[in-house]
Length: 408
Image (tube, rainbow, N blue to C red):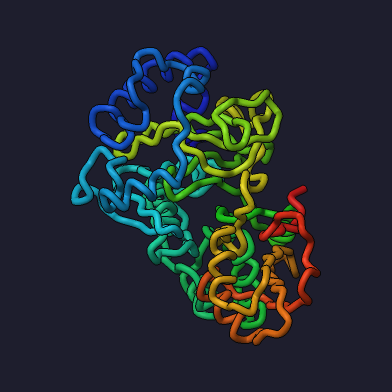
């Protein structure tokens, strides 16, 4: 393998700025001519005047709520794509519900760059443990693996014993999935006396990679790097073997702004991640991810020259990811609405044995914890411990989701 995916990764600052000054006006023109919802959102602007990241700050921010509203009026994509639904390869569904398009062009989701940085290529068999059901995560990594020539075992989620057996039988060399599920597979393989020592690389996302877990993988001879992607945008940033921040993908422009606004913050300050994608099929301009991060100064020691960010640092709102799934305040409200006896509820995210854990505390004079647990699974799509506490015992700090995990 060569050190770099392509020449774009090592451009000088002047070369990248020159290329962007052409690509950005073209993408905005494309959006305004072929994406009616994006054109309406942008209003009366001159695409030729938007040539730099700094110029983007003059444009309005697009939030996910706007996608949902337009999709109800013009299903399934709300007029934000430049191609008709019939011309897209896939339609995916995320919580909301929000519907995202999927294409099958070469590295359509731009995940190949992240896999290449990890060293995955033609000689690898990747066990893809991202979900293939409704959400695009499985196909994002499938498409990326194809871009680097790797073979894929489309494992999806669950059935851990079968996954461990398949990894051993096939000779899987790399894993793709949430950070902690690989440990579940490895532990199961140990119980079954299976040899998974051929797995030497792990491409993870969809949740926080804690240093202790990365070290545990390293102790097993597994290099674990994370990428930062969303269902709407595909890959946004990725780690290289230097492991010094996450390098912004060449197919997007990232801004860090004051949460809830479109105003960029000074370099190094934590703010909300705003992304403009150069994907011509789905030209989202200044799309608000709701995630927090910060720009790192300088360039990566690996030789890739694009801007770096610190990676995922939480949510700008109270929404968080637990076991790779988003949990949102409106879901907690829906849980409370199901049970008249519940006065208030609070979701607490922690770590137990290198895995995410969730506790749902509910205020009630009396309640059936088993019935509430069933509702938790139905509404939050996750299983967790339910604790019934006395009325007025939960903190009155406005939080309904309390993420107590450390990201240091």
